[in-house]
Length: 290
Image 1 (tube, rainbow, N blue to C red):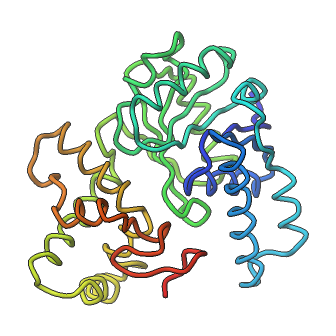
Image 2: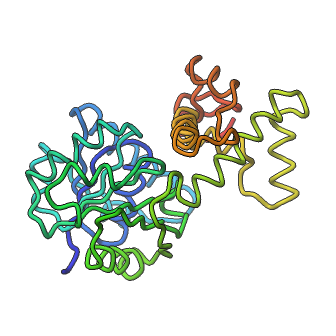
Image 3: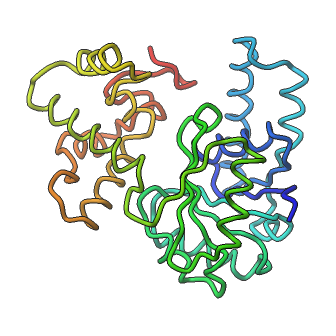
């Protein structure tokens, strides 16, 4: 099958990044959100992202216009019927994801691949809500999507060989990203490892071992991390990191995944990181660190 039109369900940080990346590869993108306001905001933020690239001489005005012309807002989830692949990128809420896949199952013909970008939830359980679980797969993109050339492809219990092969061909040949095959396990590879590091950095901070700035500098300078673990937490969203840790703690039962109490406090206070302007560090409205 030739992939021409890709559906993206959810216009949050990951949905925006995936939609922009797909359009930059020349694919037509249909993006859906719960409300017109959220959809308009998602496209506005994609435009901001492109403008920032123009400022850095990484993109031309003509390229920006071409990318935006490839992205269309969905009038309703029914528009996903015209896609060859649909990628769900909503928040890590199992019941919400099941509801989306229940709807997609009724709308999309059996040959359309349905992918979830979940990082911790069971793809098998999500697929079970559909009548064709063999066409459901996990595609875990990492933030920032355009810059990270890796996608974890997650096989659920009933994912067919055909679905896996077509998805891998899509990632490797069309998106020109490196695909990694992952057998379903909470957190897969990347989330499991990075959230454990972030959680340990949070314990180090809460114990008063060092300041947030010094903890991050130690990892940036000592191990050549682009961002330290606490800034990574800010950029992922503290609520997303908390949800990932809680999911892995629930599934594995290992104390190393139990979220730091400091993380819970920050989320309760509404300090969710770059998207709210304040986490362990402060950020401007475009998500740049102050």
